[in-house]
Amino acid sequence: MSAVDIEAFVHDLARISGEAILPFFRSSIGVENKAEVGAFDPVTEADRAGEAAMRRMITATFPEHGIIGEEHGSENPDAEHVWVLDPIDGTRAFIAGIPVWGTLIGLSRKGMPAFGMMHQPFTRETFWGDCARARYEGPAGQRALRVRACETLAEATIMTTSPKMFRDGDKTRYDRIEGECRTYRYGADCYAYCMLAAGHVDLVVEAGLKPYDILALVPIIEGAGGIVTTWDGGPAGEGGRILAAGDRRVHDQAMAILNG
Image 1: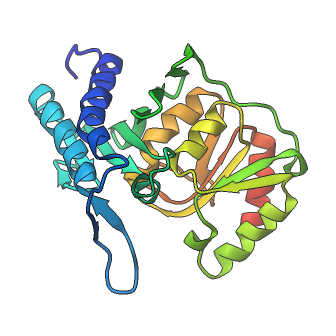
Image 2: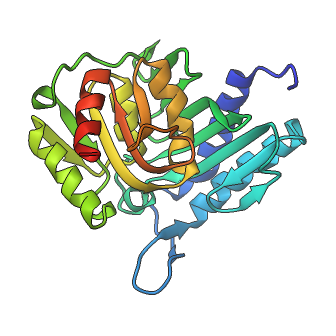
């Protein structure tokens, strides 16, 4: 690994991706559907431009590193260090003009999440972490991120992007957990995980995630003192069915329902 300051470099990636993406937000940008017939998986020129800008900078600085991106595929994915990029996590929010989307920049080392950032250029907010600590910077300044204590599901706020992401028995399990919680919110994509790290949300439960949807968020959550796993308790960096919690006690209670 080169002597480049990774934290500073990722902040630069966030800046250049934001410069590429932000002019398209709340514009008359066209939207394409990259899903198969019968589904809707939107992509815009902003997604492609943001990822392309980051890939150029990574390749110029770290030519030996791999890259996995949502829009432009994989390069050298078996490298020791691999960048995992989602230029706009929350494209549906983006095309609706709602600022609960963000750019996810993750770095894995030997297959494990090592550093992650979520950047929102419209609100000028950045969340980042390295699994040991996590920070936030926004219009009011910079501070440490820390999850909050939550003893039981009955005290918890739960979030998921949409109940429609769950299939068959997974929906039943999610509904059971939501029914135990004090309150719930939908539709925040990566913002839900950052609000968990910031101590405003207690649980995030999702399914069908790809590595670029979650890997960058793992170091932020863990750095803030939280826990994020798959539903069966495994590592979350590869995606799939994800359970994130600020307090291990509610993580354990949710796991009991998911695996009951």
